[in-house]
Length: 141
Image (tube, rainbow, N blue to C red):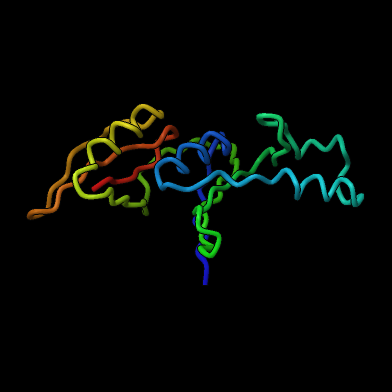
């Protein structure tokens, strides 16, 4: 069984790049799929659904990132929506950094556009709550 977590956003490609770093994933490359659809006549070569990013074809309104292990079929999908995020997430992801590397992971994500919201603690467990570049909450412990 595989899990896909879908996140509504304004810029799916920027979000895919951010979350790929956050999770140790890779941004999925859809160039060959899109080229195959165009070559097979299933998608016009000048389709508004396609953009070029770093010399590769990509879907305009969707991007994704996946684990580097090809046997792990989980992924995150980012889809464009017209409205901005306005309230606290009802669900968020918790990232567990390797022992002693939490602060480095937090600094890396802040350098990529995350915002630190607060520090949390419950008993001996501590974490840092961040917002990604579009305001979606995540925790790093």
